[in-house]
Length: 53
Image (cartoon, rainbow, N blue to C red):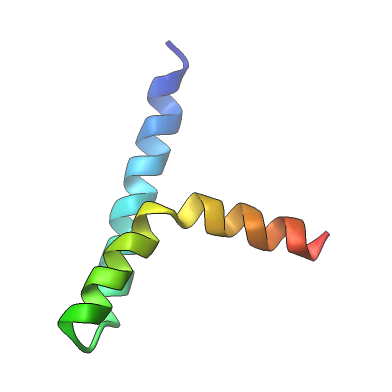
């Protein structure tokens, strides 16, 4: 039952990241890479935070 909140946060984060990456893309390949980055944005954040520690 507690999964709904985290799913909503991930979904909103995905949409926000996708909009950001698509707006900054200059080609079709960049849009595709932006879509893939938007899928894994939580993993990228955790990786950067652990690297900072």
